[in-house]
Length: 198
Image (cartoon, rainbow, N blue to C red; front, top):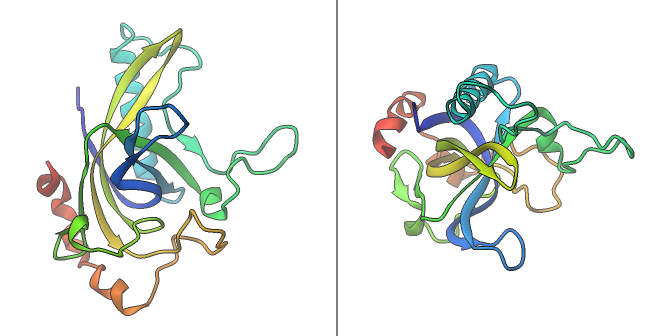
């Protein structure tokens, strides 16, 4: 069973790449990021969904349990009572998203020179675009079954609008500033992400 997959052209939100962060008070701190996949990247979404289904079936004697959580969310989902978007930031509304986390510091590289994020003080990963290596795995806890997504490695390529701020501009919109140019590698460089981060 394939235990790792690489997804290109995603946006990173609510990132904790350098220091782990607890999602709720009292929880174990984890390195994490919300991974946004644009809905027009249909092949990426289908590949992730099919992989999650395979992993869930493999962990449940070849059957897909009813109502199992595959860990892939629709950012355009609305509250059935209020009719409001469950995710308020508009960048989510045309994307699927995965909450990925890990106990161990993920590999994070930046730009065409592939510098470690730790060597680029002041660079804010939130809202940036790039590629990510994920390791999905099945879980079963107190009667709940599903698939979680481990965060293995990140390649930050282009700047975007920070999502954790109150800005309403889409984070998929490319910044045209000078430091953005340094982070924008040739398209062919993305082809070797899996081997670089494996």
